[in-house]
Image (cartoon, protein in one colour):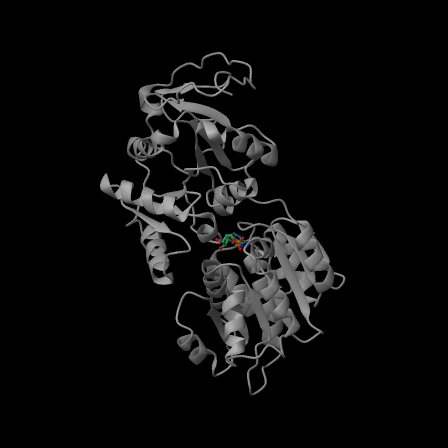
Length: 431
Ligand code: AMP
């Protein structure tokens, strides 16, 4: 299947070629024709599947076929859970629409920044608005925009919006839209709440389900290092230095924990920045830009802040703590191995997290290798719970091989890799 066969205009095909895409991803080959035909769509798809282009391209096609009227009302409304995702979707809209004539106007609005400049930018009218729910309602309340001519509503990462408590805002927004419209809903998971939302929202939707491109089971190599809680920071510093990791995303479960860890890393000259909900939008954008540019080596993030961050080819993700909700583990490790590349997800697991580790394994349907690093072995305070038969010791690699830093891209050939020969196995001992 090629993009040409999907019925997109030449200008859009040009933008696709500019982006370097040659083949539509599974979600794109299913969603694009459905959206072009005006159907409602219910898609089970995570970040990394190409879902953004899956809805943006056909929406741009439809809009560009019908010129706007003189007031330029909002015709497409895209709701996202976070500021970062809103910004990224906004960038995609601009990128894919760059060859269209006449040009379509798009804007992105989200909270945490001044509202007045956003009101000014909306004045001349926009065709496509990307928004987070709270700020959108603030703008409606200030009469800065009207939603009564919206033709297509897109809920991106709907599950996350519900997790973040946006359901009431979403319902208020829906009440402001014309009754007759196209609805597209993208969600990684389908909880009872999501199903309830979709029932009232979607009319005979085309249902699309695609396997995540970078599932835990596929591209991401996963390992759990067993370590005492008090030793986690030291172990993280050791791993970063020992393997010369240059770009690592670290997840902590609290904002406070993210700040503390960032401070400690900076103290030992590992350049780090934190990104979480208490940081100003400016600070978050700056941290992300510094990280992408390679000026910041470690980005320490909470789950909500990291949601939707698109960092291409991120080689290492570290769970400094396992997430409270196992589903977040999948979102977290989705930060590595993006768009067909491979990556490595490392969890630093202390005794109190053994149960959480098993829950994660139940969710992903496979076991995660437990390992220990010499000098950072956990104290034997946990009850022995053997889950795996003892393995025969593996032959040592040459020190050359063992010390090679991880490089994403050439992993498929390797069996579970050893990071270093000074790592000892723990299977059958603590678990
Ligand atoms: P998304 O799931 O929308 O966040 O997209 C994930 C990544 O895949 C983004 O970096 C896109 O630029 C990239 N991408 C989207 N569609 C394609 C495609 N057809 N071929 C290759 N990469 C793509």
